[in-house]
Image (tube, rainbow, N blue to C red; front, side, top):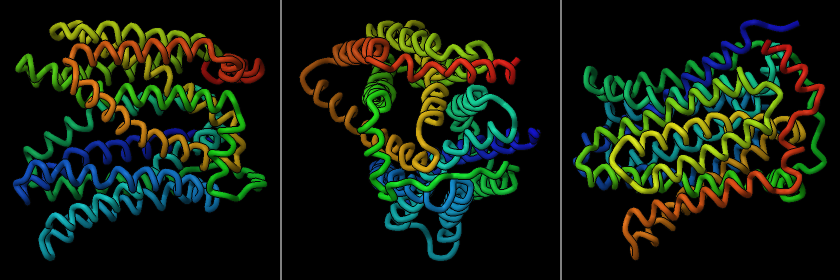
Length: 407
């Protein structure tokens, strides 16, 4: 029998955790600047948590399969809440300095990524207990990602204007604590998880390597991350600095977030049972987006490209999550999702490094066209890779079941 409270509690946990993560990404650099007055130190604190985050994603996937996905989600959110709250406690007790910022930043990263991965692996359990189709649950989750990207930094910035920064730290810690509570009390049907034949932490990588479609999806995901990171962190900021219009950078990122929300909503309510059609549309949207952005002409063409990219992202995120959930054995799901997360965290710095090399010998517009060419290559590969269509498209009985739950 379906339980009506499961999905709302799951989405509450997802929303509060995402808001807490996006808020601390604004609050922590602000706090570093307040206490040290050194802009470079804010970047150092952020960079220091990157490698531990990738390690935590890999190790967290193994722990999810060992101790349970609900338990790991709760423990991770509690740990994240304590790491953030420690900023306020240390500040009151001895005062924050650079060493404390780096130590607590690393500690927070060690909890954040496994928590996100654990909630992702809970998708099938939430769908089973709530009676809501897997695609629709994933689409709802995707809409929250877009909303957090749009509203999280804005709300955090507003809070910093009306409250002392340490009080905002307590609010972000409370968000993680609320996420832990929501997952802890969320009703779930009991599920039997067969033990994996391979108990190794590397079993997730082994399974990916042995499955050609799964490996293909990983390559597409990593290719996308390599291209997205320099677009958001280098090309767009530099373009709007040239225009002396930093406010338009925020609007272009907001256009991406709105597109992501719309794309996930369209997938959940209009593409039931037609994943491959959504996959094709999403990859075409990415190519269109890249071609619109590459000329770097003013604001409106770039904004249109960002909306197209957001729509593509909103369609692709639920598909990837659902396909992995359906095809990866239950006992290996944490390690496979963890492997994906860990490699994605490595791909972003790789993309930034490659863009730095390009811009050392060419101008910004050339870099943007290189990204556009990259999107064309990734898009074509995503549409013609052998065996991928059958892997993505749901089985006929699954499509009928999902249509009944969404209709």
